[in-house]
Length: 200
Image 1 (tube, rainbow, N blue to C red):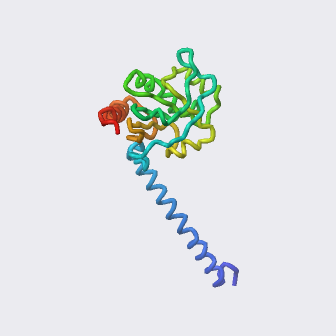
Image 2: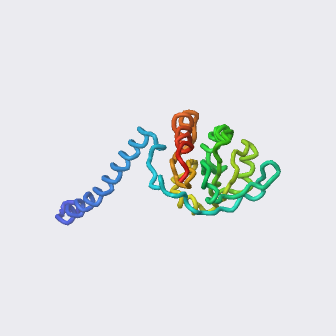
Image 3: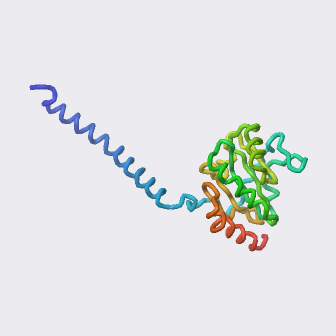
């Protein structure tokens, strides 16, 4: 009788198959999750931070960045109070950030809002070159070299954009790239809603 025909070999084979069941279940669930994401709009994933105060994280400015001959300040959450602020998390190495850069410049023409950037895990020279190439839409840029601030903001990945109300609370979060479509159908209406809300 060969080893393959022994009762012990049959038990071992069943144990191996049984051990593969959790892996098969996991792969099946992962496939369904990815299918669900591809069928829907990932920007609609809700954020637990909506309605909560923006993180009180102060970030240093991007070294050497100037606007109108003056240094651009870093991120100071105290400046959110009293103004509707749009916070964009970006990086020069982020491909979609290049695509949305002209739309941020377009958005920055609305003088009723403040547009602020969080530069994530970037080299200062690369970040300055990025803004030099596309133009700087930001009145302030905070540097997040180790992604700690991004974690506090609940950022899944760059780019992401937040609307902060005059009360300093997060009113809306857009996951992913700003596009012509979601700028007009989603982001601008959320900004208008925040502008219409009374200051706390």
